[in-house]
Image 1 (cartoon, rainbow, N blue to C red):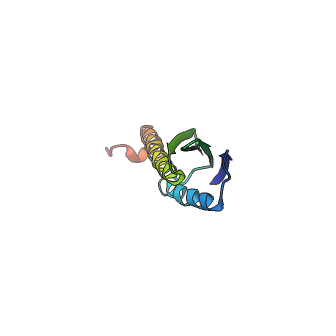
Image 2: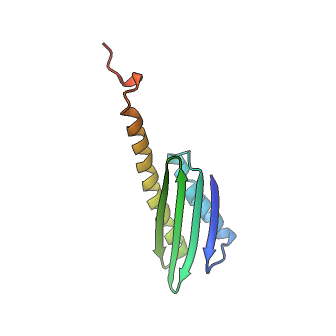
Image 3: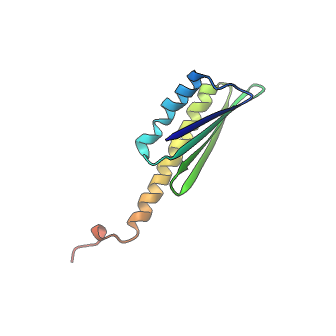
Length: 108
């Protein structure tokens, strides 16, 4: 998984980088085929905002979150991405089983 972190009006510190990596590692528990992750941090007055785009085979998943604290914004962002990844994985598995594979055919 390639991780690209950028900051808009903000320097990305090693602590932020490590925190994001630890939180996004949770996504690989559900889905191993994450190709690329782009995370953008921004600060606008008192609002801390985080946006992320996950590139997975066949789709791009995007989520954004804002809070007063950057770490809480990252937490809610990873929760949103986690739900999207699980939903994407269910769509793929449902789609593949609908093809009428031989192992899903009744025995006659």
